[in-house]
Length: 327
Image (tube, rainbow, N blue to C red; front, top):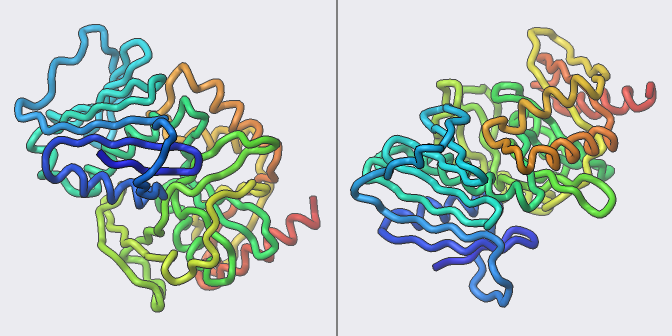
């Protein structure tokens, strides 16, 4: 048995069989969970992992398939959820905060990235009833302490821009994924990833950083881990209140532009980048309320990132300052 803490949440992990603990421990630490030995608090979440030599059992006949993506399939039956990959399955009782994974021998032949996606999907799904919702975004603090979320799909330049701004003194929460929750008077963003991952083929100078392993990405390329927290530990923060949303996309132009974005347009993108396969009917209304409140507390812009921003990330500061004067 092992325990991990994430803000006010305590997770208890039970495992049977060698090889499971290391993979899941790495995932949790990458997702900003910290091992903890002593706690009188009862765990809010409990996960158990078992090697299953016979592979997956039969899904309940009433189970309804709700998605299929990257080799994963999701099924719902009442308020319970099954995630499958090949002969392995993850049974999630979200309202009870419990997950039970049965892992076939073939699971351990898969890449560490795929194994972590399997575990991570289940964990994030269990966080939804606790009011924490994932978003595909980088989270930063400007030098004067204003929270910024840079939202965009893979290949939109978030990671390169994030690392460039960190070098310029910006604070940071997370490179590619955050959790949103309703605070006492505003929506807060919480770090969901400790390290940055950059396009391994991008010709950017990352000297001064310790680089880690390369892993396949979702678009047939490769990403490489960058240990930003080791180089700029004093700039890391666990939470922030976003005041600016920047929706980024790369354009083949010499100069970057920042344009106002309507709340309707922004909400459509936020829903797309919230991992639609994670939605469920029991927490969807709460998530929509979180996203709408986020839009009410922020200014929203479309960033058309040109070649100049790639060379000098400080241009975003200038664009934000100019946009602020005009609003």
